Length: 272
Length: 285
Image (cartoon, rainbow over all chains, first blue to last red; front, side, top):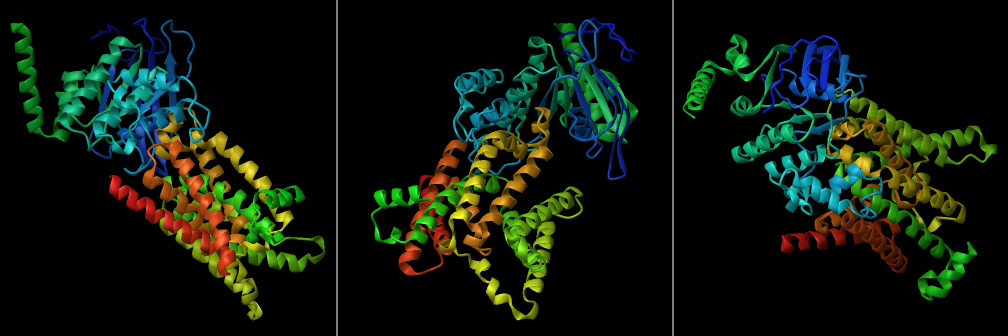
């Protein structure tokens, strides 16, 4: 895991010599109702930032605002490693789910070809696309899924396919909306492992909306707690999970268990 | 046109294509059914069956307005088709705009617009008790298609195919997940509107030959049948277009032999295809 020695509130520039993405004063208003306000977040390349928070707090909205899918105010800046220029980062997005019924005749190859080529997929598939898709899928251990129908995939398989799609081409910023249901614990863990290994292999920042606090504690570098329409607390998992508001939101039992687990982890680390 | 006539005489020396109106109708079927097969795949994918139905219904008001305008400017050679086109595009935009406001479910909104359009159309057309002369629009009359209609149809055919080549991939991605599509630089709304417009135009153009009552069945059935047996998008389209073509041509022949309405006969054969593919699906799993 990479560690950065830079401050969390860098102003204007990135002191760590790596690229970074900055979200400044984000706000979202829909149909006259304020959904998000004063969101500030600073993400370094190579970081996995998890967004947690109670249901309806605006986690998915924040993700869609960053994507540019819903209108927002505030700015999104991307600074490359030399700290030169602020271009709009290229983004990869892994949605929670796809809107299709299980009988839909859309195959994994169809999905990739539709996203990556201009040749209409009802007519023919371009040369070489099969090879490229297989390579993409290999990044998330999904080569064998290429000819399957999307509706026939399990929740975990679909998630890996969507991740592979988001990674082709490799984006500056990877945004993931973790599914709430339809994916088993093992599938979820494999998903987290894959995502977290991406940090080491590619130069990208990852923002993950998450519902599984235990996996967040294990894999995230930084955690942002969204509550009351804004980010109320940002920091390492240890910092955020000892915050009073976070403990109140997720319940004391969970916090106690987390501290015990954390203590075990530290103890074990000493033993090793 | 006579290239087509002599071609038919050469290739199809059968009784049913002896008449000129049958040759016209055959060309009409060959132009219209592939488009229905193509568009139907996306309509079924996006669960827009009800939407296409209401587009057909809204054509009634378009006819009514066309009749009124035709009475006011009788000398300008005005055809009701332009009023129908204008009105169906208008109602499509209205449905999409109201849908985006997110105040009621899409079904409800479409239902509201569709019934309003039908009622308005009937009220205007039934004034002075003259509705019966417009009832041809309810069941359609494919055999009345003439060479100038075929020219319009041919132009629409080419335009739809070209648009379908350009927009299909983007449309598919947008239908699977709008945010995913926009993350890859696709303007989701633009393509949604474009697709709805294409539907509106093709439904309106074909309504006088197919009929308001069954137009959406022609759009839905080939794709729905194909869906029972297809495993990817290419198969889905190929089967859908083939089923639409076969139903169209055989429906035309049978309606000639039986003396029945062509559109409805075509729909019945498509239904047969649906039943057959459904059983295939159950058998094969």
